[in-house]
Length: 434
Image (cartoon, rainbow, N blue to C red):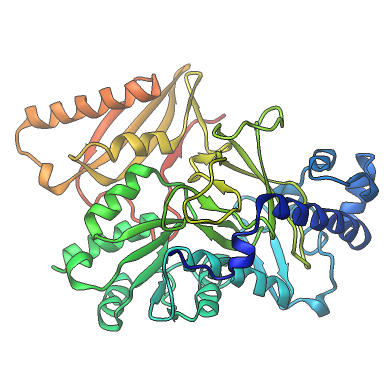
């Protein structure tokens, strides 16, 4: 029998869940109109009033919210409560402009922990588990989000944050870590570091589960992580603007459960804004139904996914989406062809001779774009014979061309020569002056 954190909510009949969402949506539009000068102005500019929203379908009358809005109203111009009612701030790094600041009331933080307590329970975590949180702590939401969710569940938290990998592995072994939360690229680095130390995560630790997110990753990379470490890899999803990590797959692993009593999702065509049919890829748009400090209406995240319509065997009735396949703004256009880093990763992770790390380099030589993929070989595939290396390059190039419909230069580089990441990995260098 499956276990639930809150069975009444998690298995609520779909029609009842939609009625609950409808009531919360109507309350939300009144709340932001009365308490957020930003949303009052945005609604007025689009000629929409809270009384116009009576059904879930009416959400299409509401304007979108963008990340740029958070930057333009920096630091707290979109908040609905005064600072005296805030419990905490989080903020993005602001590497591409002003940082985005998000505020939380005590209820917001409790809802955040509630969301993850449900999610962790859905994969069988409980009070006997030890979760090693190897996301960064501080202004970044990843570490504290997983931390609070695990503590609410009653599990033990090992707050290692990111970095100091040798020490992390030592603690993982000595304290009996059973689950870990980090980026998939950092966990690959942990596997590699353990191997260099002559140990094995599979054989020398009690690690059974991993919650990986904060960057797009493919099904093929997931399989490689599981094969090399012996753990079960689960998708964890959220964004810093919403509340950091919020949702995971359940044990059935047929999509990420989005808690419909807390969030309302749409999957839209990134270009037209039209609703995509279930099972077709589009941009994820989320409305927060319960946030007090910093609610968001139809927030365009730019993450690409699909909505799944068939019921989940776990019995949970809330909407599900597939693993994030990329971002609409991650797309590279090379000689008129759309390329996503996730497509490249999927191809490479299916070739046993290829290692776990790669880099895409895009350049322009004269009037023409060029794309090179640097790959590290798997240590077992290294050969002194030039013919073997040329054959591998040809194999990889042909595999990439068959998927991308684009001729790509392949460069084999030494194992360990590409940069490793303790946070979000960088997979693309675009040297073009566009």
